[in-house]
Amino acid sequence: MLSRIVKINKLAGLVVLVGILLLGHSMAFGATFYSGLTSPTGLAIHPSKRVLYVKSGTSGTVWKIPITTTGKAGSISVCTDQFNPTMDIDFDASGNLYGMAYIGGDSFLYRISSDCSVCSSKTTDSFNAFSGVAVEAPGLPTNRIFLDDLLGYTTAERLGYGLLNQYSCNQVFDVWDLGQPCGAFRFLIYRTSVADLVGSYGNTVASVNIGNASCSTLVTAPDLIQPNGLAEDTEGNLYIADTGAGKIIKRDILGNVKVIATGLSGPTGLAFDSVTGLLFVSESTAGRITALPVGIALSGKIKLRIKNISGQWGPIITAPPLTNTSPNTPAACVDESGNLYVFESKLDNYLYMSKRAPAGTWSAWTKLPGTMLTASSPTAVCEPGGTINLYARGLSDDKVYESIYTISSKTWGAWKTVLGQTTTPESPEATIDQAGNVYLLIRGMQ
Image (cartoon, rainbow, N blue to C red; front, side):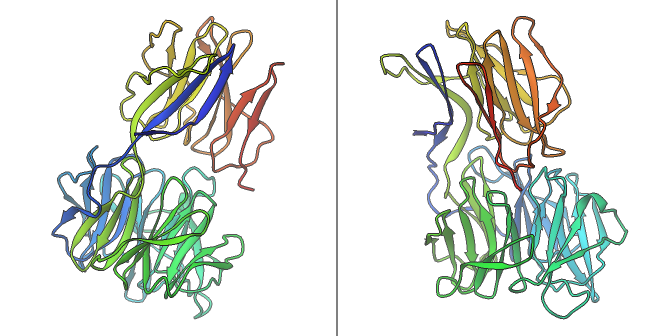
């Protein structure tokens, strides 16, 4: 059992540690998640529901398999068999699933909504039958979808993109030429950790600079034979399914490459589940989905431990359960009276607050007012005088917002945009000095 330290606030010699408990996974390495499928390839996990989507078979069936809290498979059902997507599929932030289909020399971008209704749009350019598909990081205002093998103006391999806010059913979908990368990508993934694309082609996996479509090799032969599916975990590690070698490769954030699984039967698609820490692998030849516990499972419960001025740690305390919790990091601060305020977001993308009094009693979680949605963890500072400054990133426009809570009246101010910040794909972080100056740190994308 491990704990990750995520935030330390000091006040009057009291150190408060708030974290999400990380639990080791008991599943045997390489356990079967689901079997009996026909040539499963593309995998994707719904952004807000505990459901794995699988592209299977030559007829183009897309299945839905619920993921239980213990990482087991629920009852499988057909989402749609109305189109045959190429191997790669990907979700947008709203829960729409996208895939390419190549029909009669024309390319179509299909969209499956959360209720499994299907529509399609013919693209302005043609793509081959192995087109990679990747949606840009959720919340970014551009909301682009990247598609590979653009052949509108040249027979050379190209990379294209379209704006999802311009997607309409049964209408032509404009795809713009981004540039000529290093090859025709079978699978694409947008890495939120570094804001770039990664694609698999030939015997190589490469990073693609979105600004100019230039490529940088990440892994190639002899480490790889035929890479296909790609996934990234919450720590920024990259996973690669090597279909030709029957293995899974891990490339960590320092560039170290190692084999983490061998003996697989045609591993093709990958999807990482941050809640369970499982990497799902579609074994196309064996007709099954395998679950590899490559990460550490998040319990979804907030844990508290207090260190006194003598340096002694108290017992681990569990905060009241917040149902349907996202695996985001909580925020916390302590006011002048010693009350601990804890903030967390749920899968509904709203913020919630609980207060722990010095006597150890917790208040119920309350939903913060206002319509501002947050796509990432909040950060908070308790100011002298009885106010709390809370900051969070907006889901719809990716800007950083501030709201001020007055403790005495228990009222929140309106959410306001913090002026002068750059667009950020990461959570903001705030702290306060003894003079009452608030420091807000933001990792800007640009």
